[in-house]
Length: 116
Image (cartoon, rainbow, N blue to C red):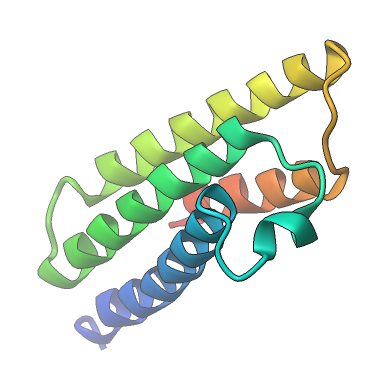
């Protein structure tokens, strides 16, 4: 059972990381017409998600190999996401355009990252 938990966490985090990587690169590089479907996206939020997706994949390797730096990697990802979230509110208060679903998505992403 002790060995199953890291693999379970790594599997979930890998899936989350790959999904995030696919969606963020699709918006950044306008693949599959996803950019148009996203509406008023905020580019720095997309980039923070992209960077976090790579960190998720590194952290999933850390879970499987029981590395001590896994928590630090996820901590860096959390800091990046919180910084983007605060910057998003600055962007909103400055009159920038955005999708309201972005706020909920950021709260969800930060919560999931902190849970790991």
